[in-house]
Amino acid sequence: MQRDKETTNAEALMDHPFARSTPTIEKLKRLWELVNMEDVVAVLINADPDSMASAMALKRLFWRRVKKVWIYHINPIRRADNLAFARLLRMDQQPITRLRPSKISKWAIVDSQPHHSEQFADYPFDIIIDHHPLGPDIRAQFVDIKVEYGANSTIMTEYLRAAKIKPSPRLATALFYGIKTDTDNFVRESLANDVNAFRYLYQFTNMNIIKKIESSEMTRKTLASYQLAMDRVRILHNTAFVYMGDVQDPDILVILADFFMKLAEATWSITAGIWNKTLIVIFRNAGFRGNAGKLAENIFGQMGGSAGGHKGAARAEVPIQIIEQEAKGSEIEKFLLHAFRGAL
Image (cartoon, rainbow, N blue to C red; front, top):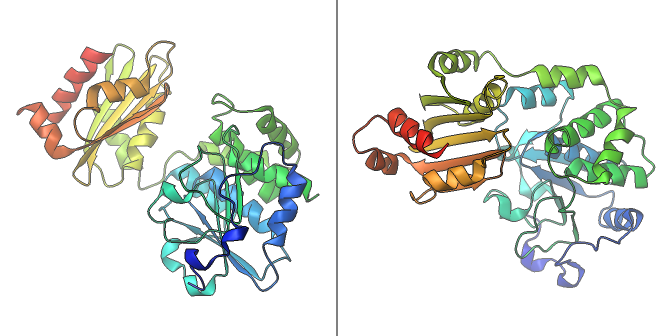
């Protein structure tokens, strides 16, 4: 790298985010002051629609203000809708394996913070823009974290408006979809700021692309998984449950859990499978009663893995060796069915 964290001018670092009362135009000026025409900027993301849209917006804000902006994602993009998003909106991004730190003079991270992944930990970020809970020891030259916002795309839209930049249809569509997905169509907690940004972007958004992205639920590779899941699904009162056995990609469990929530009779959807010697269980809940996060914790929290989430969505991961010990010789599917019947 051209520099490291120790050589950064400590006096220029922020150790807490901007105050809520700080006008966006003031923050924008500070952002622009950090870069010059000789800079090559790397924007790092954990790729999903909100982060990809945010990276696109930051790149637009730096247009003609830096030499080059590169976008790098730390995770493989496998979900069909996210693949459609990246393809239809022509996302110019690369996997982080292609990153050459010696070529980079400024570092940015959007819709994440350095502590969110070990793959972020080694980079001396100058710019952090996020809406997730504030992590420990956040230090950078520019830190804008708005925990109360429903989507990072809302923050970036406010920057574009402060800069008097009219978003292109491609950028507007990306930001619109970023807000739409991260607020879950405003079902999740959000602010009037999210609604205002959403309404503003609507006039520039290509709704045909939005519809295509939202309808892109499967790829040729996932068709077999859907077929297997539909053959194996069990309906337990108001719960759709499927045990997939070994899976090549744990994301398919998330996709299938969302898919089975489309059953009119289901207020719960639970999918489970084994990946990398770990049992992964995905929970979805749309009922007035029950809490997916608490259910995950109650069943799996004491088993030595991780379990938790929110009322409507949760996840548990437990080493398969522990599950086999808990099952005491019975099949894993039967063990899970017994556990869920007793808890739901």
